[in-house]
Length: 466
Image (cartoon, rainbow, N blue to C red; front, side, top):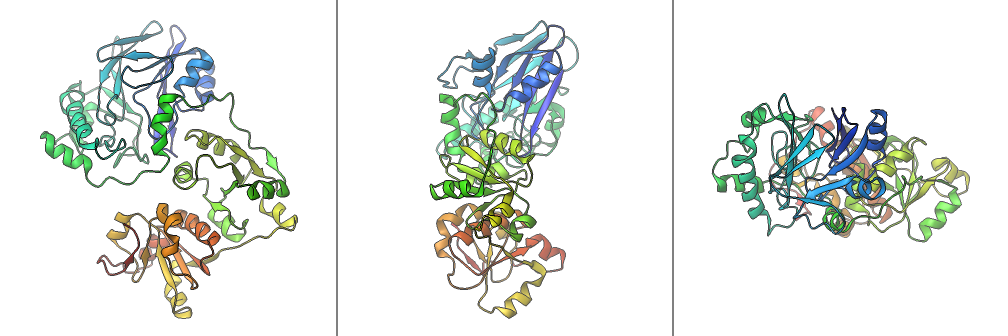
């Protein structure tokens, strides 16, 4: 049997594969918090004997070394992965057996990364299952530029050979279970479906019809979105081996004065509550990143990995989710959370700030009241180019910390995104550098359009990006 573990925050999946006859099990592309696989295997009466890596990951810390060194699993990875710790290095055509009946055949499938392999799980009856990593996704392939633009064309040519000369020649009934999916910055344009088949991808994958290599390469390199800053350190960290963890960080409760002391010594306070809770009252200078699926990606964009972190939580239940999300991308210095939340901070006699919120449908009223008002759009470049508010400035959210000095100082500033998630983060960043007065335009471009508002598509506004 195969049990999938989906991680919406990273847009990825891992898989537990169990040989029910022998009780042996394997995990494909495990995340760092391995307790979830161990508990599930135990519930099924199985023991994890193998961990398979399809490639050296750029977007999360692998749990393979943890399973090997803490629990005795055999770690299986490409012999070309450059791993600096014990593992079973495999080559194209090798077969790794798990238990009595599971046979994983290794397929060299370079492209997303040069060492990439896929694993074809062959059974005695029925179609095979391909664990494709990033070599074949639902509707697309994983991007080839994560190792640097200088390597991207060559890797895209390898991806063409992998797809056209290898994977699409497998039987059409072959089940495909990718690691990357919708929401992953490793996957541009991946569908939201958790799995697919070779036959389905021959019909609908946007790269399947691109049989000419150079046409394929151009398509693979066009329109790729930016990816989070933390990607730059993930590959080398996975090759060296991240620190081993015995358990999840506990995020202990901290009194307001203890939190204040940590902040004075350089810790970062992350407010993970909802937009509504944050704007109603928050600790001045805190960074608002609501605990929604993009949470860990935006921590990885905006917060240095060595910085100690303290949190404001919506509830005690959020402690475990925050810990899981952040250890997966290498944020281990998690000091705790503000006990009693913002009310405890206020009760300790410490200052509390609030954000002025205006529905975006009332923008024209706000402009009338404040003729000097500047409007800032923090969406991605392609969103801006597809349509923006008249007279707005543009600065993509990841650029805000370094480019805030270019924004108008000493005058009202209204901030929006597509809806409210990114603009909540943006307002918290701008607040602590002293811009404003600040207004959060709730509802964003989506709300503006829903109310019949017009967007401009010509380049007639002041873009700060680029």
